[in-house]
Image 1: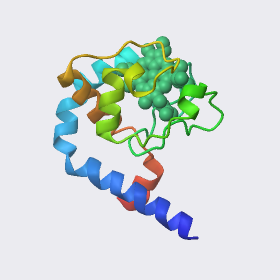
Image 2: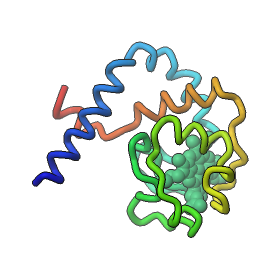
Image 3: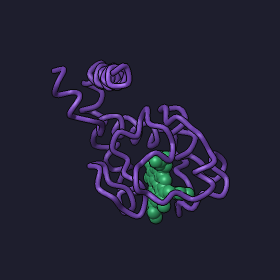
Image 4: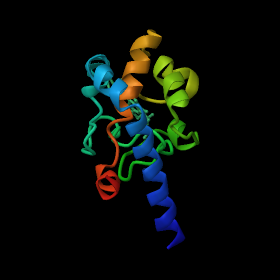
Length: 134
Ligand code: HEC
């Protein structure tokens, strides 16, 4: 029971966070989605499986936690929380953050592009919890 409660509270926080920068999201949706084109070949944002684990709900998620995805040992032994800051570091230089991971992506060097990407990823979360609230 307490587990259910804390998960609802957690999603509520994400929904509020998204709502609080609602206007900047709609402005940033263009560049964010464009930046995501570099990831889209391998990552879905709707929960469906791909070459990489889905990025739906990535912000706030524990690393290597998508059920059924065969993560590399490098990812399995790394325990991260995907905060916007952590995700920014990983996208900039994946091998520096999770050495030996098998994601075939060298990194996105442009910080503005990364910020737009992460704002976009913050919008692809669990709609179920949000619908309950709004
Ligand atoms: C060519 C395929 C490919 C591309 C392009 C790619 N990824 Fe990945 N990604 C993967 C794979 C495969 C993994 C799992 C790596 C492992 O297990 O070592 C992964 C893992 C991840 C993870 C860890 C997820 C988790 O559940 O902990 C994140 C976050 C991530 N990718 C973000 C991105 C972003 C953002 C981009 C675009 C800037 C991107 N990836 C581009 C294939 C890709």
